[in-house]
Length: 119
Image (cartoon, rainbow, N blue to C red; front, side, top):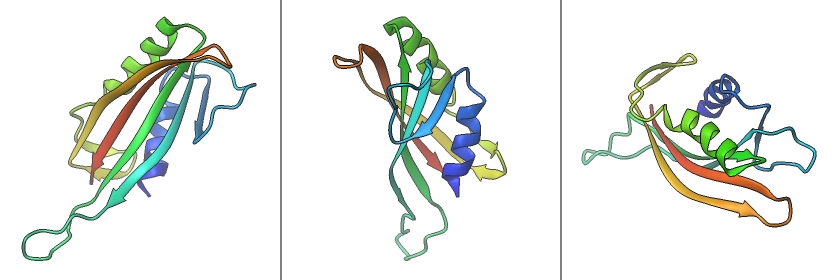
């Protein structure tokens, strides 16, 4: 499953915490949180479905805006990657920035990217 490969990659980045879906109040920062958005097997005009893609939102969290942006640069660096992705052959990875924000309640900063993996 491509999510397992993605998790392995995220764990190689300079984050103290890597987890799916939700950053908890006590989690160490900087942190990466990933959320699967969509996954499908596109159909060719002839009905074939030989390739797949998955889109995953990856949020970089930091105590400061600069810390969140620095971690997000590590995420963005995968843009244009093709090859062996922790045991999965990948045709292309695209990284597209979504938004930056300050969570008013926790006073933590977030930089969000959509990662699309074609495999």
